[in-house]
Length: 435
Image 1 (cartoon, rainbow, N blue to C red):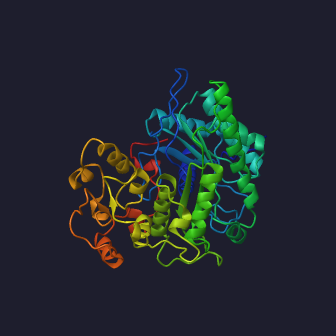
Image 2 (image 1 turned 120 degrees about the vertical axis):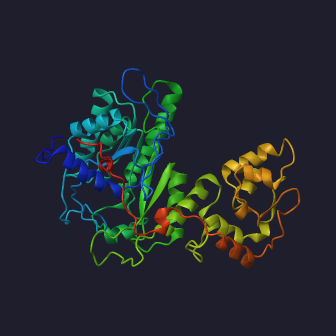
Image 3 (image 1 turned 180 degrees about the vertical axis):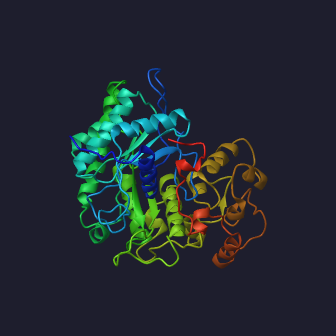
């Protein structure tokens, strides 16, 4: 497909505009895939090699994180890049993205590329430009590092499929948790079109697994899986509704991650909520904690929330809140409880639960041993016994435990405490950098 991209702006100016425009997209994560250098290209990809560096607001910065363009044919109420906004516009060419990626990689600034985009002209044109970019990186430059790219809803399925064989991870943003919210704030978008590429990636990955079982050297399709993102607080969905959507995405579509982005009012519009206290960052924090419980601790949404109790307690993390509502299951004896029971104890994580199960087969544990294994005793002490004994006398009463947990002053991330902090680290923060 042919599309003419304006070339009036300098590359450094384009980078400044399009790196800043990408900061609202939080759906980047660790690579989740290993790929060794073949000796014929540049770079490699290791599982933990991407998300070791974060900006002040929790966004990943070890990738070159950019939009291909911030031009867009849509006019979503919540988006800074919506068509009706008077903001500086810029678009890269595929060659420019390749030059930046290879240049920054050789300078050791980045380990991979996160490439998203506004919709320029049409979904098909945009997806084709992203495909051209990835093809040049992989085939002409031999780049073997991590690449995360957006699948554009409404684009031709063949274009998405070709791009999937060049990318490590793909993502499609759901934008808002429900179709009803989408109709209000983004009426030009359709939920069905957003779900189509998600279904396509799921089915293609299943087929690719069968191909790899038969042919070891078959090309891999999106080997690191897919992710998605939802804006939280722009519409009136409850935490229960949001977590039900996330649980559905994990179970039915094998989603690697669901990201939650606290709504930031960047546009003036009567349909957007006014947030006197700033973005709901503490609510976002609780949703991430609950998401962790779904993925690693065996919890279900219905255990954490319900239609009668639809929102998380902002004063307590979801696991402590659940434990206080189920005191009949405690205290748990750490020398006898199975792994899944230990996972439900506040202060015991999945790593420390595994260590306990292994260590108690070798001898008797005490509270000092538990602390060395990573158990957070200031929380766990109310819910466990060790060798039939409590660490010190505590009451198994909701008010007593709640009061003591709140006195412990849970350590929150800086962004959850300070709602004025909302920026992404810029490549220009390094005074040595110049294009």
